[in-house]
Image (cartoon, rainbow, N blue to C red; front, side, top):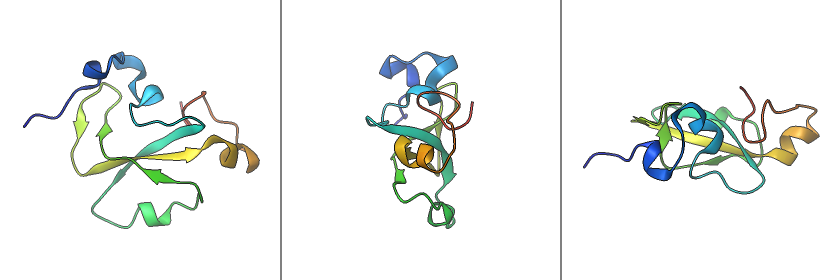
Length: 90
């Protein structure tokens, strides 16, 4: 079975990571992390949450990766200003 592309969620290619379909209110997208090692365990944010489907910025599925989200309030409390409303990095 072919995995869905970002466009099937109504998201434009150029801004897919900014509007990930699994992003919940109050969260920001941290990035995609490889599932085959302990990288998720090394993320120190207390509110981190792994999603189920990672995508490239162009909306192609990334096998063996998971998107990771963090509560925006935790990031801002640490003194970090996210690059956009929904992502830490631009």
